[in-house]
Image 1 (cartoon, helix red, strand yellow):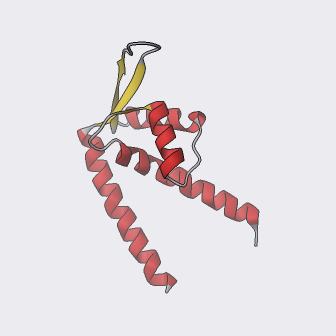
Image 2 (spheres, rainbow, N blue to C red):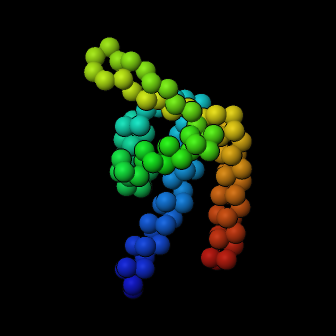
Image 3 (cartoon, one colour):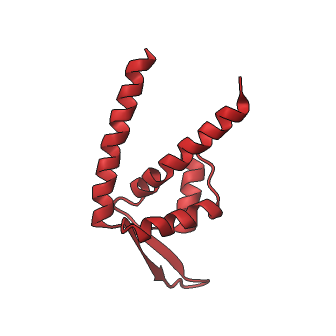
Length: 111
């Protein structure tokens, strides 16, 4: 087995689904960056680093899919909280359709 190929492929799959995962996490709730990273590391089989997460959050914000606001904390530094925009909700629903269609198509050819 060509482990280099598998590793590269796995990396591309992860990159391609991370936006989908982040939008899903932000549906109906707001989260701050470190909280998102911890959740992904704990509950989803994807390794994520700050150097990946924050640029992606910035891209999603630039694309109008998420919004952010700074919230002062009783102690410590302010946190930047992210929320899904209405445009982000529409994009997420479309991404779900695409994901489900792709999954069903792969299941059909894998039998």
